[in-house]
Length: 207
Image (cartoon, rainbow, N blue to C red):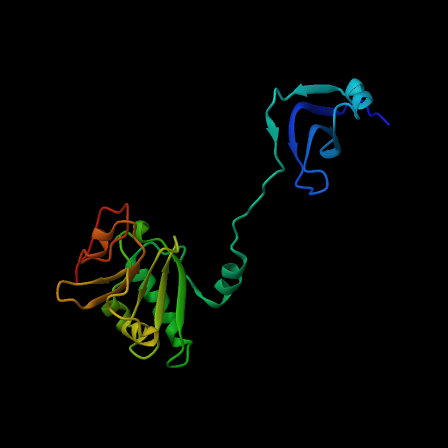
């Protein structure tokens, strides 16, 4: 069967991802759908009647890789978290967390996501442990940075995790006290700075 108006690609390698037929050299489209995949010798009649034939000149055709990058598990868990994606100041973020704390039972985790430290007008950083302690000194608080590579916790959160202070990524002030910020920065020297700043930001803060 041949179809006028079909578009054919031949003269290259068509990756099929089919273990029984892993590679072909010809692909024929019918409208917006893949109609046939095979070898040119077997599809000679279809190639003759194709509306257009594209010579791949040895290049490869790959399946369409469509990824919405949704992180399905994280997307589901986000429904139980405090959304800080629209926050544009540190004070605004703290206010959102305080409001969420009022709806939580004492001792219950307050978990947020989506804060972009570099977009905050008043401070290009995550909140400090002491700032989060003003919201609650009983309920553990977790503030996740949008990249997923940094977070901030209050004292109750640090105590609940019970991680040693020398854990890689924990930032400390000059006195060796934890700032509450945990950052997986690529440069070890940045981890030793008495700041809770993030990469590619111009402002840092000390406590």
